[in-house]
Length: 235
Image (tube, rainbow, N blue to C red; front, side):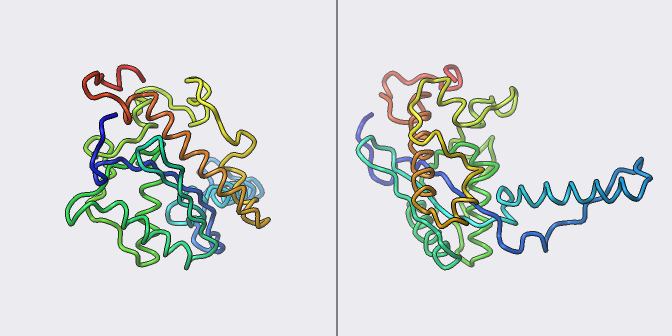
């Protein structure tokens, strides 16, 4: 990769999230389909759907909070930085630091590289910033067809034309090393509950490195511009 000015280096980003403590208070009522007639069947359906929605609250930008923000600049010579958000005050400070790094100047943001960022990471960063009154850059676009940012999840599915897979699936498929294979995002809430913040940090850093390695493998970062190819052709 040719040397780039600091403000032109891409930022590889990953989040870890958990449900807010009172997520259940905000759930919209589940409604059984009209063909459900039995009161017991209706009650069971509502109970099951409500439990499912609550279980997925960590993935909802309106019902989650960030417990870790990880990033690394586009360089082989740096390690990921992970800020752990033990509470909302820590989350607020982490978001302020993140937006300070993302903003290149008054009308431009640094290029972000994510995995499923348009559907999850970027909306979560923006929404949590609004809830906590840490205002995100107004120039951060999450339009997958027009945004300058790179979402590898979208790239690998050709913007939804084919079925996408998980980050770890693609890591295995492309032969990339996985630093902490024993832990997944679904385990984060339990680790936070247990106070195992080291595991949260390690998992977030691992996924940042994995996203970086996948972006490099697909030639979205760190390649010789003289030999540039269309990464959609190699994905």
